[in-house]
Length: 172
Image (cartoon, rainbow, N blue to C red):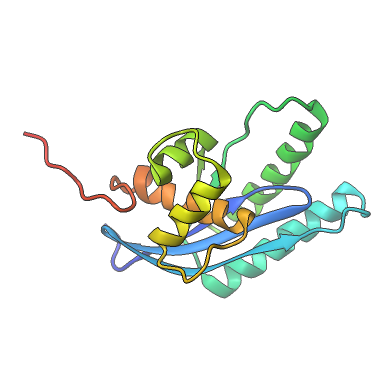
């Protein structure tokens, strides 16, 4: 049993823009902490971009001290090269997280959408609006940051057993 809130880092992986979002979960209570994006130089070689990605997210971990990281699972894209690059980014992110002692959870995009918006085919705009509502934000975060917060919220649903914005129903 964990005392106090669980701080969750949600990550929307990429090789050009990486979204991150942090929330605290205390039972059914969600508290927004921070969100943003890391922009990686596209004119640099992939190994250097992956290193920058790892260092940037490591700085986020140092500053905010999450204990759990939730990341979007790989999906089958049309472009094999894009899927390969995304896989490299995901690997760098997961290796950094495990190296920093974080518990890592992966969620497919449809699972994230269903947990946050109520259905697995939610649009970017629907996800941004729902994240804004659930995190009590004054304005919608950027698309990548909203996706990262949604992934963290998905952990709150699947990892903690309570859907964001819903109460748990008792079964008899």
